[in-house]
Length: 472
Image (cartoon, rainbow, N blue to C red; front, top):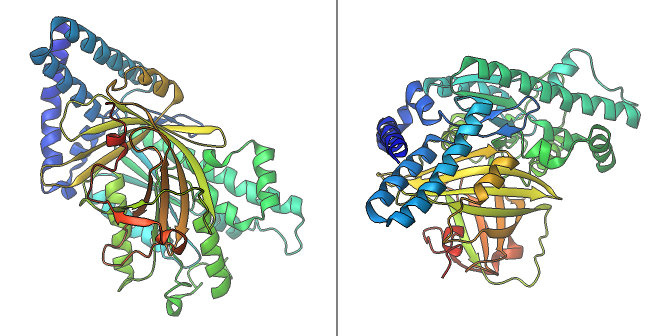
């Protein structure tokens, strides 16, 4: 008992400054030291690009706070039971730490988009701003341009076999570069962001269905592996060929030759390639300047790396029950299960998530809270399947796991997710989510769902998985 009490006291002391720094109104000016401390127990990748998780310091705050609470308010029997549960979580954390070692965070961010979208220019400007926040930034160059500049380009009359060889080489080189930069980032032992000028799924936009499937089968790849497991976030910058045609040019890339029409078509295909990823953001050209467009990208990135943002950026709409989901756009169907863990801090929700498609799953540890100044702070880090299974037994027994199907699609430059709850208090409920990337621009709801919308529930906490999971 004394050992656990000492651990509680030590953990609370070590995390005190962290909590203060994130509740500060000047959180946008986080120093490198604060970022490093905040993410000290975050995840690292293994050599093949998948994730192994070391839980965030927030977990330790919850564990320590929870133990302190139970010491004061529970009977000896209840105390021993709860202490045993927290001790098991501690053992899981210790095991993960032993396997991976303590590591600062390394984020993999994809910037994609059609020709002349501003991503290559924007990456350089983003690097400077992220460095000012205390991050080291690596830029993973666009692989297709790299290969074609070196003379590796399929001939005009290329056979299917030659096309498969070329496109597969892009993906293999992409993964090799990303993994190389990641290993270098680990050696730095400081918070790092990998800004990828396109990702593995970009190749999908340049292949027909038969060639794409042939590559997957030949190399043993899967879409969830290439789309979900390698990247924390995907930001799509819309080509100037859509909405800013007067600025469309290919002068900054001598290996590109797409017309405005083809550029627009490629942009649509690239957006579709990442449908199904949990964090997709689309930044269009309805801005006053490129700097404003870039600011929207930076705002998205800031939240992804843990800087709190204003509530209500993610809009939510309650729909009438649907007998059958029929979407008139390309979409992906995702199976998701959320399991809630005990949390001692009021307003903090922690959960482990299993997300899958076609029987292939990825796992994550998520936490969300509201800061003292009313901003929303969220953190999501991948974990491995073993950690997920181990933590299932430590779930909050007052709540049930929540299962839902998510229908992901793009409409009018917005990324929508239609959530169909399959169990719990919200069984049969349909919630339509959309990220409001540009709060000044109205969101046009898709016409095939608009008539089913009952009301907006963005500000209503009673329409959440957390509430639906509560047992009577």
